[in-house]
Each structure stands twice: as structure tokens, then as C-alpha cells.
Amino acid sequence: MTGERSGNADAKGGREAQLKSSGLRHGWTTGACATAATTAAYTALLTGEFPDPVTITLPKGQRPAFALAAELLTPGQSAMAGVVKDAGDDPDVTHGALIRSTVRHGAPGSGVVFAAGPGVGTVTKAGLPIPPGEPAINPVPRQLMRDHVAEVAARCGGSGDVVVEISVDHGEEIARSTWNPRLGILGGLSILGTTGIVVPYSCSAWIDSIRRGVDVARAAGRTHVAGCTGSTSEKVAVAVHGLPEDALLDMGDFAGAVLKYLKRHPVPRLTIAGGFAKLSKLAAGHLDLHSGRSQVDKSFLADLARQGGADPALVEAVAGANTGLEAVQLCAAAGVPLGDLVAARARRTALDVLAGAPIEVDVICIDRAGTIVGTA
Image 1 (cartoon, rainbow, N blue to C red):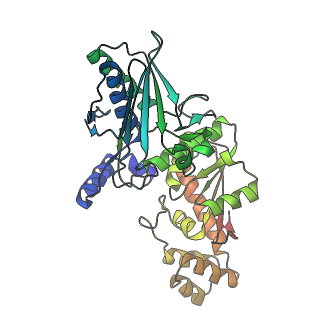
Image 2 (image 1 turned 180 degrees about the vertical axis):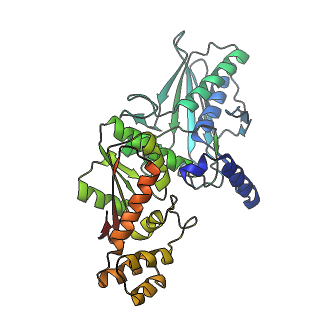
Image 3 (image 1 turned 180 degrees about the horizontal axis):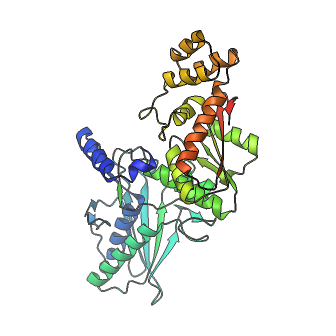
């Protein structure tokens, strides 16, 4: 799903209907789990009893209940409750993680103060929704926890002045599989979520990470970023342009997400680097490069080869090639610059999406070994 589709109400409705028909389960964000744990912990701190299950109200009004996986009460001092994250049927790296909230009484008038416990990161770079030095707990989960602390305080006779420390068991290890180190979030995971619900295969977390990557690069004063389809193309972009790590955007299949966000938040120069087959899809006008949502068009490649001077026999061979890579290899052997032609058309697609934004664009196509097979 591209960034465009994620913002389309009809597409959302169709996706939800597809999820229901396929039997895929929704899950809960780390922010929802942290809110449930905080609600249970604060209730226990004030009453001596942990509500189990604990029910919370999400931003859109849903009221899920969460079973507690851990609890510890030190009367009058602190209470800790833990909830295991269930991401439903989404392939989420935080699925099964134990998210804990330890709540302590705070100074009078302090309100809710957030702290990063073990496994929750700390922001160290500008450009993120939370300023440097703060725990990596995003604004919506913070507000959700504040609202629930206020509700518990009103119901159980508390002041609402508390320190809420969120931790995630093994969070620092899990965070190595996320964008956090590159974004300057050190020491663990982020507590995320805007609706509280994880929609399976929505890819919203990846797209959000792309946007945060652009924000961090801009805040760091970068004038050149690279959207790369994978680690091999990242290495090529670094070798060609000498880019630092915080200028690299892990685009994956979401070319549309990179281009649409940069259109609104421009950086002077963008390099798009990726495998020939994926970038041939961008050349053909596709903004979602996933194999399940767009295919390599051999007829399109054959037509490009013809425009590049291929004879009829080569055009026919390209049209019947087993893979895109075979097509570019056949053309290279005949001196037809199919890689450059694909790169040029991919660049045109990118410029069309950017729609006049002040961004210079270059494109690098590579093969599986990381050899450059086309540029524009």
C-alpha cells in the first residue's frame, strides 16, 4: 500500500473489508499497551488492587481489555503492571514484547512526568515529535496515558501527579531491528501509535519511519538524502555520494511514501537507488514496488529497448525474458542501455510526483551484486 492509498477513505474501507474476509486479527500498539499498564499500575498504587483485565478507551472510542502479565506493588511508593503486546496478525517486531509501566507519586503540581525505563529509547536528535533528551514516547500515547491517569485519579482519589516509567523487556535488543538507531533514538524502542490499533499489513509503521527519517535529515541540515530499496543499494548510494547514515531513507517498496513526503518537506537533492527490477516498476509509473502489488512489465521493458535501438530479435527476447535482470543483461550484451533508460523513466515518475518541488533527482539501478547497471 502506498502513502496515497493509506490516506484514501475508500481504500481504507476496502482494506478493512479484506481483513475481515481474510480473518486477519487487528492488534494493539505499544502506546495502547503502555496505557493499559499505566492505568492498572496507578489504580493499584491508589487502591492496593490491580484491575485485571484492565480496560482503556482508545482515541476513536474503542474499549479493549488487557490481561496483566506482571504486577508488583510497593504500598505507598510504587506499582508496576505489565502487558504483553499482541500485534494480531501483523508481522510486528514488537509482537510478544512485555511492556511495563511503573508508577510513582510525583511532586505536587507536577502532573504526569514520563521516564524511560530499560528497553525504551531516549531521543538524541532533533526533527522527531519529541525533543532531544526525552523518553521516546510519542505524543498520542503520552496524551492517552495522561487522560487515563486523570480518570483514575478522579475515581480513586489521587492527585494525578505521578512519574510514569515505561520499560520493555529486551527492548534494546528488539530496537536493533528498527529504524531507531538511525533516527537517533538510543537505548531501546519507541512507544508509538495514533489510534491504539495495529492493522495487519498496513505498513503504516514503515511509512511513518520514512517520514521521521526525512524529518531527522532536515533537522540535521542534510541537503542530500537517498531513498534506497535495501541494504545493497544503501551501500552503493554511500559509495557514490558519500552520504552519512542519517541521510539514508530505508524506502523499501514505498517509493510513493518517500516522494509524497518530500514534496511537502523538500530536501535539495534526492537519490533513488534500488534493484533494476524494482526501479523498472517505478519507471512504469508504480509507486508501490512490492511484488504482491506491482509486477515487472516485460512489454514495457521491450518497448524501452526498442526505443534504445534494439533490433526486433532483441526486443522479442526482452519481452520473453524470465526476469528483469535477464532483460537488462541481454541489452547490455548488445550495447543497448536499458538500465539507463529505466533509470531515466524512473526519474521522470519521481519528478511527476514531486510536481515542481525544489528537489534535484538522480537514480541509480543496480543488480543483485550491487553493480550499477543504469543511472540518470
